[in-house]
Length: 89
Length: 190
Image 1 (tube, rainbow over the protein chains, first blue to last red):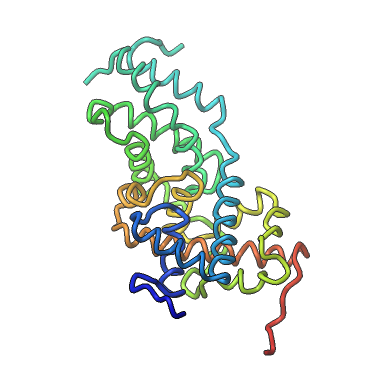
Image 2 (cartoon, rainbow over the protein chains, first blue to last red):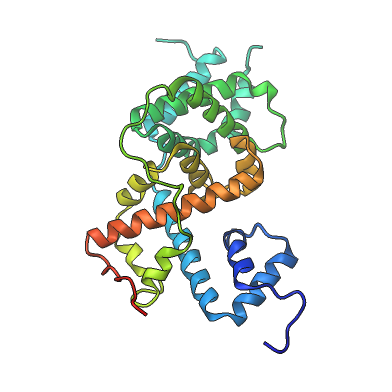
């Protein structure tokens, strides 16, 4: 590269920060540095896209379970019992 | 301190909406539904009994998850989980991508895995890595909040999350290869 900016980061630095970048945990300046690197570096961009879709995939798939209605009902009854609004039958 | 009806109403409005999160995390920590229900119920009851200690405006989700975690460690962890654990100590970063970048750069093979495969693989991560991954990737907590709940520095959250994600990815990839969802790429002889 001839037009090297002193703020340019290399592949290793970009990959070190990749998950923080994906998770939006970087400061705007550091995030911009990663984005600038990805725009210039096709292999890192491809990896970044893969990791991003992997993280979203886990999130979408592992969040399917919800608290059972019976559990919620038990808790509500217990709370009312605690306040004396509900007497044990 | 005796809780009043007004306390109960406020608790129902502010804390109870997080029951799904509490239950899901309980499920991943304990590894079975019966224990998860007990753990979630106990967490909510403890939280309600110390509701007067909760400072309004602070993070109620992190507060509940902290109570959950302490309850689990103190009362439930004794019942040791069974099964083999995923190795997170010898993880080569980004190797799955290196294997799939030619045949499947989008990682579409993931979509062939069913939900139970993913949950099962998460459950096989060692405790502290599973906990971090679940709080981050399943429940979407920011690093700072995970650090607070798990009582470690943010740097530890980052490194655990990195290793947990890479280990889980490797686990899912190996499973997908085994099931024939993706063809294993032989080591390149360049």
